[in-house]
Amino acid sequence: MGEKTNLLGEYLRARRDLVTPEQAGIPVLGARRVPGLRREEVAMLSGISAEYYLRLEQGRDRHPSVQVLQSIARTLLIEDETYLLGLVAVRPRRRSRRPRRETVPPSTARLVHTLNLPAFVEGRYLDVLAANALASAFSPRLAVGRNRLRDVFLDEAEAAMFPAWEGTTAGLVASFRNSVGTDADDPRVIELVGELSVASPQFRRLWARHDAGNPRTSATITFDHPQLGPVTLDREKLLINGTDGIMLVIYHPDPGSPSAEKLGLLASAALGPTTSGTTTAPSDTV
Image (cartoon, rainbow, N blue to C red):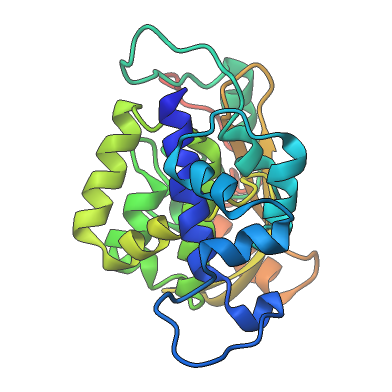
């Protein structure tokens, strides 16, 4: 439980630094030493004592009420409080901290390979666990064994596909934090966060913000494709029942749009005229 309380303190401090006095409706008089709100200001605006809020940040209070956390969330402009509440939820400890093995249900693997749209399966660590031929044709990084965090942050060709790279990376990190939750001692999380923090200043900055977005949020993404040019696709992330956070990800264009025409051309070129409608799952599907 101490582990979760420390995560709560880190989260509160990070979010407090991101809220300006002006956003909170506090007049600014003279120079300030902190970039965001002071602890006592958060406490005042949340209707709790400064001493109690200090105990929360220092991890000395292990049982804050839902009402207190919701009040703090409003003060810190946290729109979705799910992650915040999850930091203090009582969950049984796992005896083993070995990396989890993620397995795609066979029916889902078959479905991915029969879709005539770019589709892949994404694990809770944002690993690509399965992908159909059109997904890999759209981006060679959408292939089994790749990791979306590593590719978007560290692979120049993949990063170049996202004109709104700043926003894309912010959403990706928030989704990853939400997906892994409070498993701070998960070996895979430690590996990824450590590697990316060293290799990417952008990741390091975003991870320190403690943003936690909804990984199942639909979005419209405009890609700068190296062969097709601008392509705008809707992205759907669908939770696969019976799994620990594994998602089916599908990109689809607006019917009749220029992007739909471009995707059709890619399918014809990559899959051939006899297979562009559907593709057959390989025998060694994950």
